[in-house]
Length: 71
Image 1 (cartoon, rainbow, N blue to C red):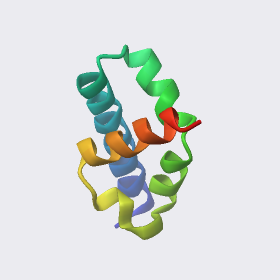
Image 2 (image 1 turned 90 degrees about the horizontal axis):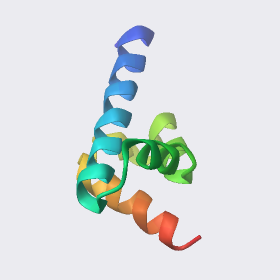
Image 3 (image 1 turned 180 degrees about the vertical axis):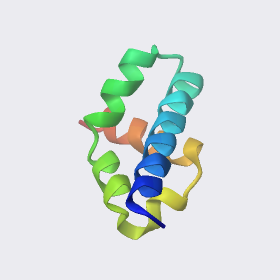
Image 4 (image 1 turned 45 degrees about the vertical axis):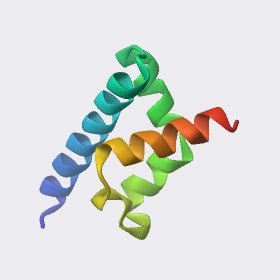
């Protein structure tokens, strides 16, 4: 996988998780984006830790939401 394709995959994954946050929790795209990029989980996803990027978008959205609620 080239560096360019990795970046495209990460951008697509991030966008899908943000959309899932909107859909699951009824929040705005701006709030979902802020929530995603402020989470520790987003860093782990982008670094490829524990193959989190292989998990479903809804699952990851739930993890990020739980992280937000616990802070």
